[in-house]
Image 1 (cartoon, rainbow, N blue to C red):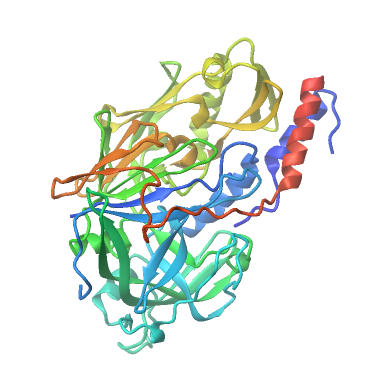
Image 2 (image 1 turned 90 degrees about the horizontal axis):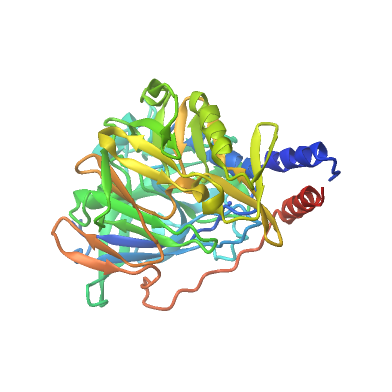
Length: 501
Protein backbone atom coordinates (compact mmCIF):
# COMPACT_ATOMS: atom_id res chain seq x y z
CA UNK A 1 0.00 0.00 0.00
CA UNK A 2 3.02 2.21 0.24
CA UNK A 3 3.55 3.73 -3.24
CA UNK A 4 6.99 3.26 -4.75
CA UNK A 5 6.97 6.42 -6.87
CA UNK A 6 5.83 10.04 -6.85
CA UNK A 7 4.31 11.09 -10.15
CA UNK A 8 3.69 14.65 -9.04
CA UNK A 9 7.37 15.05 -8.33
CA UNK A 10 8.04 13.94 -11.90
CA UNK A 11 5.46 16.44 -13.14
CA UNK A 12 7.15 19.22 -11.23
CA UNK A 13 10.49 18.19 -12.71
CA UNK A 14 8.92 18.58 -16.11
CA UNK A 15 7.62 22.02 -15.08
CA UNK A 16 11.14 23.01 -14.12
CA UNK A 17 12.38 21.85 -17.51
CA UNK A 18 9.66 23.88 -19.28
CA UNK A 19 10.83 26.97 -17.46
CA UNK A 20 14.45 26.35 -18.39
CA UNK A 21 15.48 24.84 -15.07
CA UNK A 22 17.24 21.54 -14.53
CA UNK A 23 16.50 19.28 -11.53
CA UNK A 24 17.43 15.84 -10.97
CA UNK A 25 -0.17 12.75 3.47
CA UNK A 26 -28.55 4.59 22.42
CA UNK A 27 -25.03 6.34 23.73
CA UNK A 28 -22.42 8.50 22.19
CA UNK A 29 -18.89 7.16 21.94
CA UNK A 30 -16.13 9.59 20.96
CA UNK A 31 -12.83 8.95 19.23
CA UNK A 32 -10.49 11.93 19.13
CA UNK A 33 -8.45 11.95 15.92
CA UNK A 34 -5.01 13.21 15.03
CA UNK A 35 -4.00 13.50 11.41
CA UNK A 36 -1.02 11.34 10.52
CA UNK A 37 -0.94 12.50 6.91
CA UNK A 38 -1.04 16.24 6.21
CA UNK A 39 -1.76 17.71 2.80
CA UNK A 40 1.33 19.90 2.56
CA UNK A 41 4.56 18.75 0.97
CA UNK A 42 3.29 15.25 0.16
CA UNK A 43 3.24 14.33 -3.56
CA UNK A 44 -0.23 13.65 -4.95
CA UNK A 45 0.92 10.44 -6.61
CA UNK A 46 2.05 9.10 -3.27
CA UNK A 47 -1.36 9.82 -1.79
CA UNK A 48 -3.19 8.58 -4.89
CA UNK A 49 -1.48 5.20 -4.92
CA UNK A 50 -2.13 4.77 -1.21
CA UNK A 51 -5.82 5.49 -1.82
CA UNK A 52 -5.88 3.16 -4.83
CA UNK A 53 -4.73 0.19 -2.79
CA UNK A 54 -7.48 0.81 -0.28
CA UNK A 55 -10.25 1.33 -2.86
CA UNK A 56 -9.54 -1.92 -4.68
CA UNK A 57 -9.50 -3.85 -1.44
CA UNK A 58 -12.84 -2.45 -0.29
CA UNK A 59 -14.64 -3.31 -3.66
CA UNK A 60 -15.22 -4.65 -1.37
CA UNK A 61 -24.37 -9.23 25.84
CA UNK A 62 -23.11 -11.04 28.75
CA UNK A 63 -20.68 -8.21 29.47
CA UNK A 64 -21.05 -5.32 31.89
CA UNK A 65 -23.87 -2.90 31.16
CA UNK A 66 -23.29 0.16 29.02
CA UNK A 67 -23.48 3.52 30.77
CA UNK A 68 -24.89 6.69 29.19
CA UNK A 69 -22.03 9.00 28.27
CA UNK A 70 -19.23 9.63 25.80
CA UNK A 71 -16.66 6.90 25.16
CA UNK A 72 -13.27 8.27 24.18
CA UNK A 73 -10.82 6.09 22.24
CA UNK A 74 -7.42 7.87 22.23
CA UNK A 75 -6.16 8.14 18.66
CA UNK A 76 -2.45 8.50 17.95
CA UNK A 77 -0.52 9.50 14.85
CA UNK A 78 1.70 12.19 13.45
CA UNK A 79 1.50 15.30 11.31
CA UNK A 80 4.99 14.65 9.95
CA UNK A 81 4.93 15.88 6.34
CA UNK A 82 7.50 13.40 5.06
CA UNK A 83 5.65 10.19 5.87
CA UNK A 84 2.67 8.26 4.56
CA UNK A 85 0.46 8.40 7.65
CA UNK A 86 -2.60 6.82 9.15
CA UNK A 87 -5.01 7.22 12.03
CA UNK A 88 -4.95 4.51 14.67
CA UNK A 89 -6.63 4.00 17.99
CA UNK A 90 -6.43 1.54 20.87
CA UNK A 91 -9.07 -1.08 21.66
CA UNK A 92 -9.20 -3.33 24.73
CA UNK A 93 -10.21 -6.92 24.01
CA UNK A 94 -10.42 -10.21 25.90
CA UNK A 95 -10.18 -11.35 29.50
CA UNK A 96 -7.73 -10.44 30.84
CA UNK A 97 -8.00 -7.34 28.66
CA UNK A 98 -5.14 -6.37 26.37
CA UNK A 99 -4.73 -3.23 24.28
CA UNK A 100 -4.36 -3.36 20.51
CA UNK A 101 -3.44 -0.56 18.08
CA UNK A 102 -5.83 -0.60 15.12
CA UNK A 103 -6.10 1.64 12.07
CA UNK A 104 -9.36 3.60 11.80
CA UNK A 105 -11.08 2.90 8.47
CA UNK A 106 -14.55 4.26 7.64
CA UNK A 107 -14.40 2.55 4.25
CA UNK A 108 -14.49 -1.03 5.57
CA UNK A 109 -16.68 -2.87 8.05
CA UNK A 110 -14.71 -5.37 10.11
CA UNK A 111 -12.58 -4.96 13.22
CA UNK A 112 -9.69 -7.42 13.01
CA UNK A 113 -6.45 -7.88 14.92
CA UNK A 114 -3.41 -10.08 14.36
CA UNK A 115 -3.60 -13.36 16.24
CA UNK A 116 -1.13 -15.91 17.52
CA UNK A 117 0.23 -17.76 15.65
CA UNK A 118 0.40 -15.59 12.54
CA UNK A 119 2.26 -16.03 9.27
CA UNK A 120 3.72 -12.85 7.83
CA UNK A 121 2.56 -10.59 10.67
CA UNK A 122 5.19 -8.02 11.68
CA UNK A 123 6.48 -8.10 15.23
CA UNK A 124 7.99 -4.60 15.20
CA UNK A 125 6.54 -1.26 14.09
CA UNK A 126 8.17 1.89 12.78
CA UNK A 127 5.44 3.81 14.61
CA UNK A 128 7.27 3.12 17.87
CA UNK A 129 4.36 1.13 19.29
CA UNK A 130 4.45 -2.28 20.93
CA UNK A 131 2.62 -4.78 18.72
CA UNK A 132 0.48 -7.44 20.37
CA UNK A 133 -1.05 -10.72 19.19
CA UNK A 134 -4.52 -11.76 20.30
CA UNK A 135 -4.76 -15.35 21.50
CA UNK A 136 -8.35 -16.59 21.85
CA UNK A 137 -7.18 -19.55 23.92
CA UNK A 138 -5.76 -17.16 26.53
CA UNK A 139 -9.03 -15.23 26.96
CA UNK A 140 -11.64 -16.74 29.25
CA UNK A 141 -14.45 -14.90 27.44
CA UNK A 142 -13.43 -15.73 23.86
CA UNK A 143 -15.26 -18.13 21.56
CA UNK A 144 -14.77 -18.99 17.90
CA UNK A 145 -17.65 -18.28 15.52
CA UNK A 146 -18.63 -21.47 13.61
CA UNK A 147 -19.95 -21.58 10.06
CA UNK A 148 -23.36 -22.53 11.45
CA UNK A 149 -23.66 -19.24 13.36
CA UNK A 150 -26.25 -16.82 11.98
CA UNK A 151 -23.71 -14.01 12.11
CA UNK A 152 -21.42 -16.00 9.83
CA UNK A 153 -24.30 -16.74 7.47
CA UNK A 154 -25.04 -13.02 7.24
CA UNK A 155 -21.39 -12.19 6.57
CA UNK A 156 -21.30 -14.80 3.81
CA UNK A 157 -23.96 -12.81 1.95
CA UNK A 158 -21.79 -9.68 1.92
CA UNK A 159 -18.56 -11.48 1.02
CA UNK A 160 -17.03 -10.82 4.43
CA UNK A 161 -16.88 -14.49 5.46
CA UNK A 162 -15.69 -17.77 3.97
CA UNK A 163 -17.04 -21.27 4.58
CA UNK A 164 -16.39 -24.08 2.13
CA UNK A 165 -19.17 -26.54 1.15
CA UNK A 166 -17.02 -29.31 2.60
CA UNK A 167 -16.77 -27.55 5.98
CA UNK A 168 -18.70 -28.99 8.89
CA UNK A 169 -21.16 -26.74 10.77
CA UNK A 170 -18.60 -26.45 13.56
CA UNK A 171 -15.79 -25.31 11.24
CA UNK A 172 -14.53 -21.80 12.02
CA UNK A 173 -16.09 -18.92 10.09
CA UNK A 174 -13.19 -17.54 8.05
CA UNK A 175 -12.44 -14.45 6.00
CA UNK A 176 -9.93 -13.14 3.46
CA UNK A 177 -9.49 -9.46 2.61
CA UNK A 178 -7.27 -8.61 -0.38
CA UNK A 179 -5.98 -5.14 -1.31
CA UNK A 180 -5.26 -3.73 -4.75
CA UNK A 181 -1.49 -4.07 -4.44
CA UNK A 182 -1.80 -7.78 -3.73
CA UNK A 183 -1.40 -7.53 0.04
CA UNK A 184 -4.04 -9.01 2.28
CA UNK A 185 -5.04 -10.75 5.46
CA UNK A 186 -7.00 -13.86 6.35
CA UNK A 187 -8.21 -15.52 9.51
CA UNK A 188 -11.38 -16.47 11.39
CA UNK A 189 -14.02 -14.72 13.47
CA UNK A 190 -14.19 -14.77 17.25
CA UNK A 191 -16.50 -13.27 19.84
CA UNK A 192 -15.04 -11.58 22.90
CA UNK A 193 -15.43 -8.63 25.21
CA UNK A 194 -14.55 -5.08 24.17
CA UNK A 195 -13.94 -2.65 27.03
CA UNK A 196 -14.38 1.11 26.92
CA UNK A 197 -14.58 3.87 29.51
CA UNK A 198 -17.67 6.04 29.33
CA UNK A 199 -17.19 9.72 30.15
CA UNK A 200 -20.22 11.26 31.83
CA UNK A 201 -21.34 14.88 31.60
CA UNK A 202 -19.36 15.70 34.75
CA UNK A 203 -16.25 14.13 33.16
CA UNK A 204 -16.42 11.17 35.55
CA UNK A 205 -15.65 7.84 33.88
CA UNK A 206 -17.45 4.53 34.20
CA UNK A 207 -16.27 1.15 32.98
CA UNK A 208 -18.40 -0.34 30.19
CA UNK A 209 -18.09 -3.38 27.98
CA UNK A 210 -19.90 -5.35 25.31
CA UNK A 211 -19.40 -8.67 23.55
CA UNK A 212 -18.52 -8.12 19.87
CA UNK A 213 -17.49 -10.26 16.91
CA UNK A 214 -14.15 -9.41 15.30
CA UNK A 215 -11.55 -10.96 13.05
CA UNK A 216 -8.60 -12.98 14.30
CA UNK A 217 -5.99 -12.75 11.51
CA UNK A 218 -3.43 -15.55 11.31
CA UNK A 219 -1.92 -14.58 7.95
CA UNK A 220 -0.78 -11.35 6.30
CA UNK A 221 0.86 -10.71 2.96
CA UNK A 222 2.27 -7.89 0.86
CA UNK A 223 2.64 -4.46 2.44
CA UNK A 224 0.85 -5.63 5.58
CA UNK A 225 4.04 -7.56 6.34
CA UNK A 226 6.14 -4.39 6.39
CA UNK A 227 7.17 -2.93 9.72
CA UNK A 228 7.33 0.80 8.89
CA UNK A 229 3.61 1.49 9.45
CA UNK A 230 2.63 -1.74 11.18
CA UNK A 231 -0.31 -1.78 13.58
CA UNK A 232 -2.19 -4.64 15.23
CA UNK A 233 -5.16 -4.52 12.87
CA UNK A 234 -7.94 -2.43 11.30
CA UNK A 235 -11.08 -0.95 12.87
CA UNK A 236 -13.82 -0.74 10.19
CA UNK A 237 -16.61 1.82 10.62
CA UNK A 238 -18.88 0.68 7.78
CA UNK A 239 -22.61 -0.06 7.98
CA UNK A 240 -22.73 -3.86 7.50
CA UNK A 241 -24.04 -6.08 10.30
CA UNK A 242 -20.60 -7.16 11.50
CA UNK A 243 -19.24 -3.65 11.89
CA UNK A 244 -18.71 -2.68 15.53
CA UNK A 245 -21.08 0.27 15.01
CA UNK A 246 -23.89 -2.07 13.93
CA UNK A 247 -23.15 -4.56 16.69
CA UNK A 248 -23.15 -1.95 19.46
CA UNK A 249 -26.40 -0.51 18.12
CA UNK A 250 -28.07 -3.93 18.11
CA UNK A 251 -26.92 -4.39 21.73
CA UNK A 252 -28.37 -1.04 22.75
CA UNK A 253 -24.95 0.38 23.54
CA UNK A 254 -24.88 3.21 20.98
CA UNK A 255 -27.25 4.93 18.53
CA UNK A 256 -27.32 4.19 14.84
CA UNK A 257 -25.46 7.42 14.17
CA UNK A 258 -21.84 8.49 14.16
CA UNK A 259 -20.14 11.78 13.41
CA UNK A 260 -16.67 13.16 12.78
CA UNK A 261 -14.94 16.51 12.57
CA UNK A 262 -11.39 16.41 11.16
CA UNK A 263 -9.03 19.28 11.82
CA UNK A 264 -7.42 20.64 8.67
CA UNK A 265 -4.26 21.99 10.27
CA UNK A 266 -0.93 20.23 9.83
CA UNK A 267 -1.17 19.01 13.40
CA UNK A 268 -4.38 17.22 12.51
CA UNK A 269 -6.82 15.96 15.09
CA UNK A 270 -10.57 16.03 15.46
CA UNK A 271 -13.43 13.99 16.90
CA UNK A 272 -15.13 10.77 15.82
CA UNK A 273 -18.30 10.14 17.80
CA UNK A 274 -20.75 7.27 18.07
CA UNK A 275 -23.65 9.67 18.38
CA UNK A 276 -24.89 12.80 16.63
CA UNK A 277 -22.95 16.06 16.72
CA UNK A 278 -25.50 18.87 17.07
CA UNK A 279 -24.74 22.08 15.16
CA UNK A 280 -27.30 24.66 13.89
CA UNK A 281 -25.64 25.00 10.46
CA UNK A 282 -25.94 21.33 9.50
CA UNK A 283 -27.53 20.54 6.12
CA UNK A 284 -28.66 17.01 5.22
CA UNK A 285 -28.98 14.93 2.07
CA UNK A 286 -30.26 11.34 1.71
CA UNK A 287 -27.85 8.40 1.65
CA UNK A 288 -28.34 6.19 -1.40
CA UNK A 289 -29.96 3.02 -0.04
CA UNK A 290 -28.67 -0.54 -0.50
CA UNK A 291 -25.07 0.50 -1.12
CA UNK A 292 -21.96 -1.01 0.52
CA UNK A 293 -20.42 2.44 1.05
CA UNK A 294 -21.67 5.87 2.04
CA UNK A 295 -23.07 7.02 -1.33
CA UNK A 296 -24.63 10.43 -1.96
CA UNK A 297 -26.53 11.93 -4.89
CA UNK A 298 -24.18 14.63 -6.22
CA UNK A 299 -26.06 16.74 -8.78
CA UNK A 300 -23.85 19.65 -9.83
CA UNK A 301 -20.66 21.64 -9.16
CA UNK A 302 -20.14 25.40 -9.14
CA UNK A 303 -16.97 27.53 -9.11
CA UNK A 304 -17.24 31.14 -7.90
CA UNK A 305 -21.01 30.74 -7.91
CA UNK A 306 -21.19 29.65 -11.56
CA UNK A 307 -22.52 26.13 -12.14
CA UNK A 308 -20.37 24.11 -14.52
CA UNK A 309 -21.65 22.49 -17.68
CA UNK A 310 -21.46 18.87 -16.51
CA UNK A 311 -23.87 16.07 -17.38
CA UNK A 312 -25.46 15.16 -14.02
CA UNK A 313 -25.83 11.52 -15.14
CA UNK A 314 -22.07 11.19 -14.59
CA UNK A 315 -22.77 11.24 -10.84
CA UNK A 316 -25.68 8.77 -10.86
CA UNK A 317 -25.20 5.70 -8.65
CA UNK A 318 -24.76 2.34 -10.36
CA UNK A 319 -22.43 -0.63 -10.15
CA UNK A 320 -19.70 1.35 -11.93
CA UNK A 321 -20.24 4.95 -10.84
CA UNK A 322 -21.54 7.16 -8.07
CA UNK A 323 -20.32 9.51 -5.35
CA UNK A 324 -18.83 8.07 -2.14
CA UNK A 325 -17.88 9.82 1.10
CA UNK A 326 -14.85 8.12 2.66
CA UNK A 327 -12.85 9.74 5.44
CA UNK A 328 -10.24 6.99 5.02
CA UNK A 329 -9.33 8.25 1.54
CA UNK A 330 -6.76 11.05 1.51
CA UNK A 331 -7.50 12.81 -1.81
CA UNK A 332 -10.62 13.55 -3.88
CA UNK A 333 -11.34 11.54 -7.04
CA UNK A 334 -13.63 13.26 -9.58
CA UNK A 335 -15.29 11.35 -12.42
CA UNK A 336 -13.54 11.84 -15.76
CA UNK A 337 -16.25 13.87 -17.52
CA UNK A 338 -16.37 16.42 -14.69
CA UNK A 339 -12.65 16.67 -14.02
CA UNK A 340 -11.52 18.89 -16.91
CA UNK A 341 -14.41 21.41 -16.56
CA UNK A 342 -13.64 21.72 -12.84
CA UNK A 343 -9.89 22.25 -13.29
CA UNK A 344 -10.43 24.71 -16.15
CA UNK A 345 -12.90 26.74 -14.08
CA UNK A 346 -10.47 26.93 -11.16
CA UNK A 347 -7.58 28.03 -13.40
CA UNK A 348 -9.76 30.69 -15.06
CA UNK A 349 -10.89 32.15 -11.74
CA UNK A 350 -7.55 32.55 -9.92
CA UNK A 351 -6.27 36.01 -9.06
CA UNK A 352 -4.29 37.79 -11.83
CA UNK A 353 -1.25 37.75 -9.55
CA UNK A 354 -1.20 33.94 -9.51
CA UNK A 355 1.27 32.27 -11.87
CA UNK A 356 -0.22 29.17 -13.53
CA UNK A 357 1.89 26.21 -14.62
CA UNK A 358 0.60 22.99 -16.22
CA UNK A 359 2.63 19.88 -16.94
CA UNK A 360 1.57 16.29 -17.68
CA UNK A 361 -1.99 17.08 -16.67
CA UNK A 362 -1.04 18.54 -13.30
CA UNK A 363 -2.28 22.07 -12.72
CA UNK A 364 -0.03 24.04 -10.36
CA UNK A 365 0.09 27.65 -9.22
CA UNK A 366 2.71 29.98 -7.74
CA UNK A 367 1.50 32.83 -5.55
CA UNK A 368 2.66 35.10 -2.77
CA UNK A 369 -0.90 36.02 -1.79
CA UNK A 370 -3.12 34.27 0.72
CA UNK A 371 -4.76 31.12 -0.55
CA UNK A 372 -8.28 32.42 0.14
CA UNK A 373 -7.73 35.67 -1.78
CA UNK A 374 -5.85 34.00 -4.64
CA UNK A 375 -8.18 31.11 -5.47
CA UNK A 376 -11.94 30.69 -5.96
CA UNK A 377 -14.37 28.77 -3.77
CA UNK A 378 -16.27 25.85 -5.26
CA UNK A 379 -19.60 24.34 -4.21
CA UNK A 380 -20.95 20.80 -4.51
CA UNK A 381 -24.75 20.52 -4.74
CA UNK A 382 -26.50 17.37 -3.57
CA UNK A 383 -30.03 16.00 -3.67
CA UNK A 384 -32.46 18.04 -1.61
CA UNK A 385 -30.52 21.26 -2.15
CA UNK A 386 -27.73 20.51 0.34
CA UNK A 387 -24.62 22.52 -0.58
CA UNK A 388 -21.06 21.68 0.46
CA UNK A 389 -18.53 24.52 0.42
CA UNK A 390 -15.15 23.61 -1.08
CA UNK A 391 -12.54 26.16 -0.05
CA UNK A 392 -9.17 26.40 -1.84
CA UNK A 393 -7.57 24.33 0.95
CA UNK A 394 -10.06 21.58 0.04
CA UNK A 395 -8.80 21.17 -3.53
CA UNK A 396 -5.17 22.35 -3.35
CA UNK A 397 -2.01 20.71 -1.99
CA UNK A 398 0.82 22.92 -0.80
CA UNK A 399 3.97 21.53 -2.41
CA UNK A 400 6.63 24.01 -1.32
CA UNK A 401 7.46 27.48 -0.04
CA UNK A 402 10.23 30.00 -0.60
CA UNK A 403 10.04 33.06 1.64
CA UNK A 404 6.48 34.33 1.09
CA UNK A 405 5.90 32.49 -2.17
CA UNK A 406 3.97 29.21 -2.17
CA UNK A 407 3.62 26.47 -4.76
CA UNK A 408 0.12 24.96 -4.85
CA UNK A 409 -1.05 22.05 -7.01
CA UNK A 410 -4.53 20.66 -7.61
CA UNK A 411 -5.06 17.71 -5.26
CA UNK A 412 -8.16 16.32 -6.96
CA UNK A 413 -7.51 13.34 -9.21
CA UNK A 414 -9.23 12.06 -12.34
CA UNK A 415 -11.35 8.94 -11.78
CA UNK A 416 -13.02 6.45 -14.08
CA UNK A 417 -16.63 6.22 -12.91
CA UNK A 418 -16.50 6.67 -9.14
CA UNK A 419 -16.30 10.08 -7.45
CA UNK A 420 -14.76 9.78 -3.97
CA UNK A 421 -14.87 12.62 -1.47
CA UNK A 422 -11.85 11.97 0.72
CA UNK A 423 -10.05 13.67 3.56
CA UNK A 424 -8.99 16.68 1.48
CA UNK A 425 -12.58 17.93 1.16
CA UNK A 426 -13.98 16.51 4.41
CA UNK A 427 -11.61 18.41 6.71
CA UNK A 428 -12.78 21.40 8.75
CA UNK A 429 -16.38 20.19 8.61
CA UNK A 430 -18.70 18.30 10.90
CA UNK A 431 -20.10 15.19 9.22
CA UNK A 432 -23.05 13.27 10.66
CA UNK A 433 -23.81 9.74 9.42
CA UNK A 434 -27.45 9.31 10.46
CA UNK A 435 -27.92 5.67 9.48
CA UNK A 436 -31.26 5.36 11.25
CA UNK A 437 -32.76 7.98 8.94
CA UNK A 438 -30.46 7.13 5.99
CA UNK A 439 -29.11 10.62 5.61
CA UNK A 440 -25.81 12.48 5.94
CA UNK A 441 -25.28 16.03 7.17
CA UNK A 442 -22.40 18.47 7.29
CA UNK A 443 -21.43 21.99 8.29
CA UNK A 444 -18.24 24.06 8.17
CA UNK A 445 -16.66 24.03 11.62
CA UNK A 446 -13.46 24.71 13.51
CA UNK A 447 -12.72 21.13 14.56
CA UNK A 448 -10.32 22.27 17.29
CA UNK A 449 -13.39 23.41 19.25
CA UNK A 450 -15.63 21.28 21.41
CA UNK A 451 -18.87 19.86 20.02
CA UNK A 452 -22.28 19.06 21.44
CA UNK A 453 -23.28 15.41 21.02
CA UNK A 454 -26.64 13.75 21.51
CA UNK A 455 -27.72 10.11 21.74
CA UNK A 456 -31.11 8.58 20.99
CA UNK A 457 -31.98 9.15 24.65
CA UNK A 458 -31.86 12.87 23.91
CA UNK A 459 -29.17 13.53 26.51
CA UNK A 460 -26.48 15.91 25.34
CA UNK A 461 -22.78 15.49 26.13
CA UNK A 462 -20.17 18.20 25.64
CA UNK A 463 -17.07 16.74 24.05
CA UNK A 464 -13.73 18.49 23.66
CA UNK A 465 -11.05 17.22 21.30
CA UNK A 466 -8.27 15.48 23.18
CA UNK A 467 -9.99 16.14 26.49
CA UNK A 468 -10.35 12.54 27.63
CA UNK A 469 -8.22 9.41 27.70
CA UNK A 470 -9.33 5.83 28.12
CA UNK A 471 -7.24 5.38 31.24
CA UNK A 472 -7.71 8.94 32.46
CA UNK A 473 -4.07 9.84 31.90
CA UNK A 474 -2.77 12.73 29.76
CA UNK A 475 -2.38 12.04 26.06
CA UNK A 476 0.97 10.88 24.80
CA UNK A 477 1.36 11.18 21.05
CA UNK A 478 4.14 9.01 19.73
CA UNK A 479 6.76 10.57 17.51
CA UNK A 480 7.04 8.88 14.12
CA UNK A 481 10.20 8.37 12.13
CA UNK A 482 9.98 10.41 8.88
CA UNK A 483 10.38 8.76 5.52
CA UNK A 484 10.34 10.14 2.01
CA UNK A 485 12.83 12.88 2.85
CA UNK A 486 14.35 12.55 -0.61
CA UNK A 487 10.99 13.44 -2.18
CA UNK A 488 10.74 16.53 0.00
CA UNK A 489 14.22 17.62 -1.04
CA UNK A 490 13.28 17.19 -4.70
CA UNK A 491 10.23 19.43 -4.18
CA UNK A 492 12.33 22.09 -2.49
CA UNK A 493 14.91 21.97 -5.26
CA UNK A 494 12.32 22.23 -8.03
CA UNK A 495 10.47 25.05 -6.32
CA UNK A 496 13.69 27.01 -5.89
CA UNK A 497 14.43 26.65 -9.61
CA UNK A 498 10.88 27.78 -10.51
CA UNK A 499 11.25 30.93 -8.45
CA UNK A 500 14.69 31.77 -9.78
CA UNK A 501 13.52 31.83 -13.39
